[in-house]
Image (cartoon, rainbow over all chains, first blue to last red; front, side, top):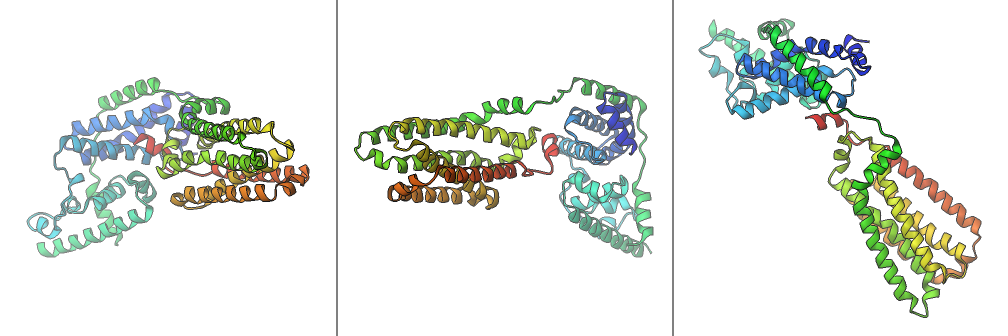
Length: 174
Length: 258
């Protein structure tokens, strides 16, 4: 039994202190995710708080099967998307246009972050969840509501593109 | 894909952001308030659940069945004026029984066509219980309709038990079983049409049998009719069970929350 399972068992038996620990475990990861997808720290903190409040309000509807992390990320994904829709500002997360990596990087350093920004939305989101948040492929699939195969293929394509661009950037700099 | 590349990717992307303790505490506090003030789910008994669903499910079904019953009553009252009524009675009641069984189609067909099973499931109500509630509603309506048909025809029957079994219960159970069998197996968009067609076919066959082979059928032993009814009832039970066990969606909780 994992710590998470134990906390859920405690919570179901009426021990509300387990809720504290659950929030404290996942708060940094969700904050980091929100920070990636929002414009500033304040907005990221608000989004994180909203994620936990929404999760708690619907906790009775969540049937614990070891997917609480994916459950939280899914709420966070939706909250960040809502925030973006409200602000209507162009943030990398929802950016529709695909920038040819070669042009964007010609004058800049070989920065992974910049190359990541140049990836299409779906691929970028998969890379962020996999390598920034270290989610498993199954969890990414649950979070984004995409089939496992789609997530795998997006990740493969994204990594190939990043590696190719990195190699291209290195040769250009040399 | 090299391991080094993945490591480089991880190292570069994993920038850390220190959570503010004050904000974390505030979030925990607010979460506790939200958790304490949330609307708690409570367990319901099957009976309570079924009766509570009646107000949502029953009205359209019973309205339809009521209209069907009124039409049948009017038809039979008009038929009683005819001299040939007694000879045509078995045919008439058997077709009426098939007609009564068909009143469940709109409920089931609509639910399937608009993917309402998914929506119904996301209300966190147990799906089998919800289907059971619907089946109970349809069943109660059917029993009332069949009872009304029997009462209307009872005075004119020469061999009441045989006629009730052979010309009312048997065609009713047969059409119910066949339609549910089809609904559970045929592709969603065609299921209602195929079932309607088959029920009309059963009605036509029964009409023909009842007008041409009535003496032969009424002479058959009651035991045989009871056995046939029991067999159909058993099959119907298994089809209802199959219907209740259908898994509507993998993402019930997600649909509700997101």
